[in-house]
Image 1 (cartoon, rainbow, N blue to C red):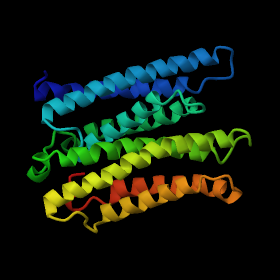
Image 2 (image 1 turned 90 degrees about the vertical axis):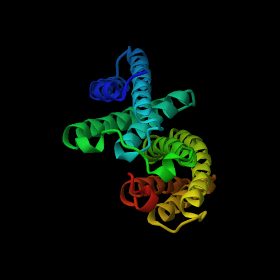
Image 3 (image 1 turned 180 degrees about the vertical axis):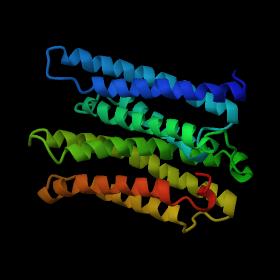
Image 4 (image 1 turned 180 degrees about the horizontal axis):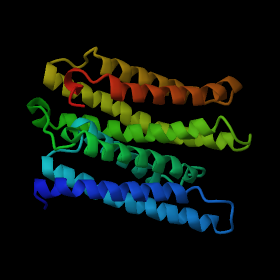
Length: 270
C-alpha cells in the first residue's frame, strides 16, 4: 500500500504516461492505407490495453489515498469517466463493427487525461484528495449510485460516435453503425436506470425524499427519455432510421450539459 503523499506525488507522471499512451493508441488506430494496416491497428490495441492497466493503477492510488471510490470532485470523476470509456470499448471490441470506435474511445480518454494534466498545472487545489460530505461518505448508496452512472456515460459516449458515423459513409455500412450504436445503448440504459433508482435511495437517506426536483435530477430524466426514444425508434421504417442517430446525439448533448452545468445541492461536490 502507498501512503497518501506518495500516491498523490505519483499521479502527475502517471498522467503524462497515460496521455502519451492514449495519444499513441489514437494514432495507431488511424493507419495509412498500407499492407501492414492490420498490424498497426493491433499495435494500437496493445497500447490501449497498456494505458488502461496504468489508468487502473492510477485510480487505485487515488482510492488508497482517500478511502473512497474516485468520484469526489470534477478531477476524480473525469478520471473515472476516461477509464470507463476505454474499459467498455476494450471489453466489447469483439462486436462486429465496434473495433473501429477504438479511435473514439482513445480520443475521449486522451482528451480527458489532458484536461486532468491541465488541472494539475493550473488548478492544483481541484486535484488534491478531497473527502465527501459525511452524509455521503458514511453511506455506500452514493458510490452504488455513481458507479453505474459513470459506466453508462461510457456506453453513451461510444453510442454517440457510432450514431454520428451512421449519418455518413456508404449505404451498406450505415445499418452496421446503427446496430453498434444500439448495442452500446442498451447496457447504457440499463445502468443509467439503475443509477437513477439508486440515486433515489441516496436522496432518501440524505434528504428524506426519494425524488427531488433539482436541475441534476430533471436533466437526468430528460437524458433517460431521449435515449429511451432512440431505442424505441430503432425500427426499420425510414423515419425511425433517420431519427435514431439524432436522438442519440441529443441524449449525449444532454449528458454533457447535465454533468457540467447542473451541480447543485447534493451534487455541488463536483
